[in-house]
Every structure is written in structure tokens, then in C-alpha cells.
Length: 278
Ligand SMILES: [Fe+2]
Ligand SMILES: [Fe+2]
Image (tube, rainbow, N blue to C red; front, side, top):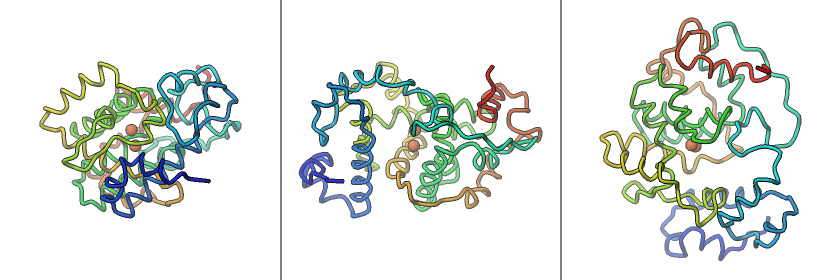
């Protein structure tokens, strides 16, 4: 892929900002930049054709894409594969499924990303609750992506410490707001996904104002810090190194996730049996 060097450096905030990044961060940013270009839909839509490939779209241009798709962007990855291919028959879940089983048999499209995020958190010597939050923060996107912070927190709330579900719920909001104190900058990927002139809606702004003052702010913030560069699709990370942390902080129900009668058991069954018509 041809990369326009000036556009790429501008997207990092100019030569000075690029110079402050270490080589790993620059490589990661380059990968995100390339992914963003690769992910541009090829629809023949005139609104898109007018956009120079090296430029981020506007909000209006992102909206003009809606009616070119066969699905809505908020639908989960396991329900509508973005490859356009047919779905595959799934391996049945064991009778009492554990979190480990869901990672092995259902979180196909999200596990690589969250495992890399958890691995980065571990490398950065984060406390165990943060590593667990990183491990779980995006897996709900298998079923739904819209407001995934809230959905994800709900999915895990009965089984994890409150701080972990807090961090999962609010990482979504904090991704829109930089925090130079921990080196977190607004992600270029969001300029691509939402449009460069996107302004988060009032409920996100109000949530940010609340979380910013909350004593647990940094727990949610650290998920975004360890989330940012976790996009290497070729890296192989397994769940095994995290199983001790899962064992210490995740209350696995003995009946199995989905069979435990918890307020969110239906969400686990929905992930376990996505081919069920009703
Ligand atoms: Fe997320
Ligand atoms: Fe993420």
C-alpha cells in the first residue's frame, strides 16, 4: 500500500509530535493508519469517491455510507461477518460453559484484540483488575457494538469486582477524550470511523464529566491506555497466561455461564447459540 508520508505525519500531529513517539508507537500508528485506509468501503458511492484516500472522512460522509450496507454498523461481529462470507457452523458449547470456553469457541473476532490489550497491560505491570478489564473490555462486540462499554459492563457485572465492570463501562467514553498525563491521545482510527469533525453526543460528554471526577477514573482510563496500540492482527496471544487472574477475580458459576439464572444469563446464551432464530 502506498503511504503518503506527509499525510501520515500530519495525522500524528506533525513532525514534532511524531518525533516524540518511540519507534514502537510510530509503527503501531502506521498500522492503524494503514488499517483505516484498508477498511474504507469500496462501494462506488460518489460521496466516497470524492474523498482523497489519504484524508479522513467528515461526519456527513460517514453517514452517507449507511444505506450502502446490508447491515447496521452496531451489529455484533459474530452475527454479521464483515468479510461478506457465509457464517460457519459453530462448535457446540459444553454443558456448563466457562469464560475459557467462550474465549475458545465464541469470541473469534474480538479475542485477538482483547488478549493483546491484556498482554500489554501485563507488560506495563498493571494491577490484576486492570488486566482483567482489558481482557474483557470489547468481547461484547461479538453480539453488539453500539454502546459496547455499557453492554460489556452488564455482561460481566455479576461475575467480576465492581471496579472491573466500572472500567469496562467507561473505557468507551474515555476513548474520545485525551489525557496527556498518561500519554493518551484521541485515536486516528476514530477520525476514520466517526469522521474527523465528529463531536460525541451529550450523554457521552456528561458521562465523561462524571467519570473524570470519579475516584475510579484511572481504572477506566488505564483500559484506554492499554487498548490504544493493541491492533497487531498477526500477533498470537493466548488466554492461558491470564487464567490465574481470571481464577482469582472472575466468579465462574458452577452451572455454567448462561445456565446460572443471573440477570444476564440470556446474554451468554445469545452468544452461545447465535443461530437460534428466536
Ligand atoms: Fe472498546
Ligand atoms: Fe479495545
